[in-house]
Length: 290
Ligand SMILES: Nc1ncnc2c1ncn2[C@@H]1O[C@H](COP(=O)(O)OP(=O)(O)OP(=O)(O)O)[C@@H](O)[C@H]1O
Image (tube, rainbow, N blue to C red; front, side):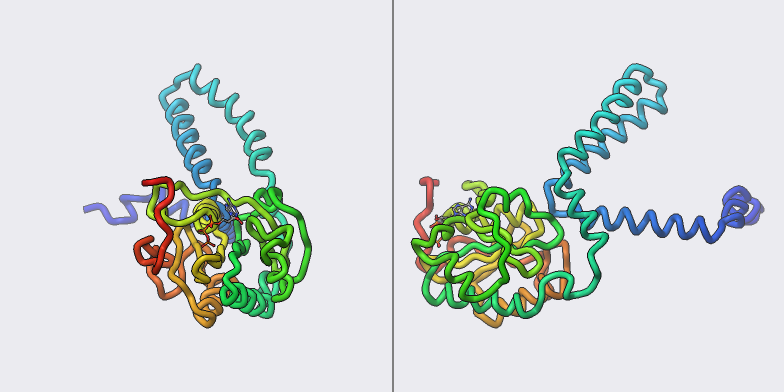
């Protein structure tokens, strides 16, 4: 009966010739692939990555089967496609490179004090029933959405956020974007979640919050003008109404601790539980007559 060694001599001899550099090489590539995965998960780039994988699969098959014309076409398309991807994902690539050079640690992201101010501002807005929509950037760059509004560069503070959303204030319409403890844009247009889904009864402010959280990993806060409720939209779902301490706790876990970058709330299976429109006390009449 052949021993294991006799059965796989090639494998063992290659393992025997493994050097420290090889191991380091594999570890670094694995790390880079994982970082790339974290960068694209939950973003519009996921579909592009899927497309690239399909493309690569067809390319390998064409090579293996010796399909000369298809292989030639895919070779050419691959070169052009590479340039197209760089142009298309220029903001994401720039943000990824910035991230590499950014110092690590909690204070490199959102500061605890800024989150406290943000939560307090949400409470004040909620008490006064002033509608608000605030997106906090995590890994997915929100530059393209910031570009739809007015660029700012201001410290997060309670009076500033209250002033931004005050009725009749010039920038109260639309969403605010927060990046690394600074308000970087206001009056921004967020992508609306489709009006025919679970959240069809909600108005546009809430659907804009859900829509942005669906396309990015941002934590999106929304205060309802009608009900004064404070909610978090995450990973395409709208969480339940939160009180001040719940909001602080969730902000801390999601933004400050960066406990999870794939969109789930700690201790809550599968992101904030979707709140069906029916649970809205005094909810709005369904829009669009659906
Ligand atoms: N695509 C969008 N991006 C950002 N903000 C938006 C967008 N669409 C609407 N808004 C904001 O939502 C406001 C309208 O809110 P609407 O009453 O339709 O929504 P709602 O979800 O019912 O919120 P509320 O409970 O506060 O009334 C607009 O004045 C604007 O400030």
